Length: 289
Image 1 (spheres, rainbow, N blue to C red):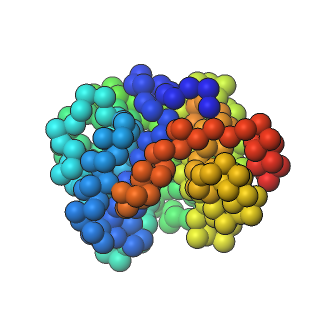
Image 2 (image 1 turned 90 degrees about the vertical axis):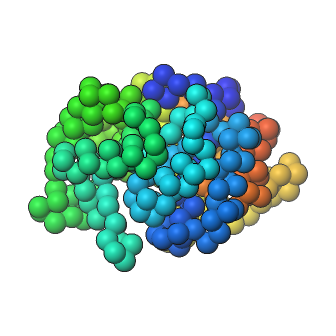
């Protein structure tokens, strides 16, 4: 890791942040399993120096934003809250597109209201594949990006980013002014190397989600990999820390937002800033790709 911070919309943020997606109930829907622990997680994150928190109105819905407001408002001057728009939830927790300009505008203002702020540093546009939505839900990417820029011009946002995009869409978003790209990426899943490289060239933050994999069949869990486990044992750290440390070393524009609903896991994740992988470790881990 060459540096401990990176610029996000003009703010110097620590490269180990926090993602609020796991604070709501199962399936990112409904109230948390343990409300008081969720509040403690957020407060402890800030105590540990985290100044970049990723959230969204559709996490819950409303739940993560309301928890952040309860736990941390009034916010410290250096705290950078990043939210996301472009989707909505049905009454069973299903994920539906909400990508027309009026929907994006409404979602941004809902985020402002629940978080208790007049302006957000960054809001990411969550792009959905056209093939996965009804014809009436589709809106061209250029129109969505123009709507996000209008919100910047009006002062509701300082900047915008893009999420779940192809390399071509990422390039379009960056040309339109996106300051960060948020895509799935980790030690065992490097399909997005081209986008990461583009972001690095352009000085744009790259924020990987699923940094340790997931339960999805095409996204193996990093912590279950034998090589990762062997490196962790050799270094006296956890497999999770190895996976996160690899990401920090991969490129200095990578910002981590590992999520958890547990204070213990939060402290483990945050401590990755002190983990140093040796060249031999990195060579071994790089060979997994």
